[in-house]
Image 1 (cartoon, rainbow, N blue to C red):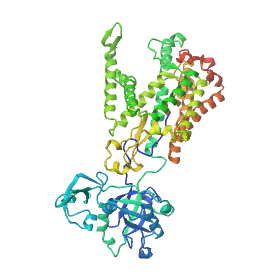
Image 2 (image 1 turned 45 degrees about the horizontal axis):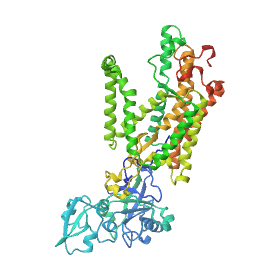
Image 3 (image 1 turned 135 degrees about the vertical axis):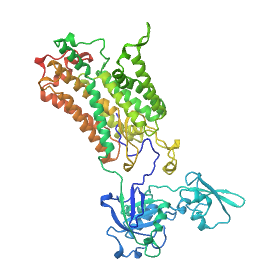
Image 4 (image 1 turned 30 degrees about the vertical axis):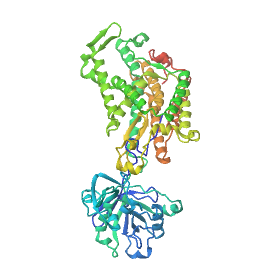
Length: 612
């Protein structure tokens, strides 16, 4: 019942920074840049800004840039971009506000050793440096200039990717230990309320020390003159509402609902074909057989119980960390569902003889065919593979396979056979979803549904996880009852999600419509004679597609989790009721078509009584 198309990553990720912007100099040098969390938006490549890059006049950290040193005559049409060094002298937002007051269009902050030390005598292990990436020692005494330059002449720096090394605080008799400095991108935060208003007037990006080395080599940026290089700046991030991942998850959800609901009426259609082949569509010919699959018809009591159990389970998951238990249970159910829905039919087509060969036969437990054993073995093996490798980059594909099979099996077993129970169930689910997404924060300090859907976040901070994304403290854990699709790097990474409940609950209504249409076709004596298209199925499925699309758009527009049933219930149940009212079949559907009584679909509606 969860719909949360996350803009934040749920599996990757403890906050890795993606440098989506590009800075291209007229000299040919090009580099990536990480946009700040504050400030003006940067245009796409087609509308890239044409800028004049300049180092600030006065302090190189840009805390007080001198506008008088920027003559307008040599400024490109879109203005000046200030190149400011990261330092502890002012915050990022103060630096941006100062640049905005000086008339700059863009603030480009480049990483520095001074900014890493932040007025400390030594750096922090792991956060600032990693000795596994380069280690050495420097002789004492050393100058402050050498320290802030990162001891670039040392053996440590020559082996280090960043080309700089930091003091660890461990001293030797004749020197001090240094280790390789991290040089990563960061998302600059608007960390000063007093200057936030001015900071939002200017775009800001962050580049690395290695990128700053490229900039210093540009002859047009030589200090004190000319200090004016031409460059273009654009952002490659995909911030449109209709990203490929949101469209794909919509299509996957609609396709899963359509297939699962249509498959739930297969038995009715099989009986119709058998009856037609036998020469008469009588109740005896199309009645239940020993091979009929089991199904379970929902009653009003079941509908109330379902919502109560769902609410209780959601609160338990909100308070207790049952991730491992739920994940193992999901894997076990996935082994069974894939064996039934996927592997058994596939093996039966490839090796039909296996169904007629018994692996063993027991008076107490019955017989197990080679087909049953083979499909169960593959199901267990694939589920175990996913359970062991669920953090792998490809695990989402297996999880989606499991989710689709679970939806097909659920709608094949659980049936709604009248609009009365459907209205009760979906109406209560509608209120349930809204409460636990929008109203629960007033009682639980955060959205219960969103927290359970997105799972447990990283315990380490984003700066650490940018450097060690595989650390256990940097991994997010989300419950697996979701369809997942990876979002591209341009969209911020992570995954777009769709809860299985947002498929199976409306899917019960779509299944009802599909089975009702199948009984109407059976009444006419053939599959779709006399233009008997599956009208109700197509109408409700159309409503499902519209509702799911509205939920996707709402997530993108409001940038927060949405209760999908807020959109799905009116679009599906509302359309179904409207069509039934128009056709005069509402009373029949409200109390349940006679042909669907008992959860089956054995007796077709008499041809004379079937609505056109």
